[in-house]
Length: 69
Image 1 (cartoon, rainbow, N blue to C red):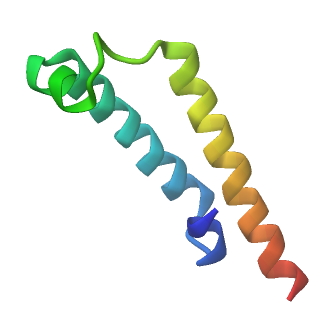
Image 2: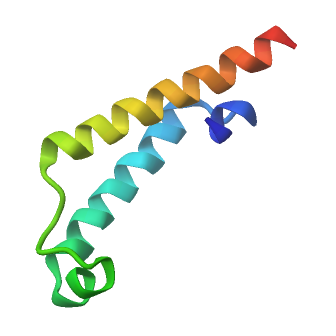
């Protein structure tokens, strides 16, 4: 939502969110990442996709808020 509020283009925001999810997948596969995040492995792909969908919806809400102002 914050990136939408500061008018970052959706394309850049989604690219940043995808990059984060990829890094998260990589880190959670390492022993250090499993220990740091206290997990047995990476989150499942459907959860990562849902994270991206919620992120996109929040971005859109931020942009909608800006247009009301």
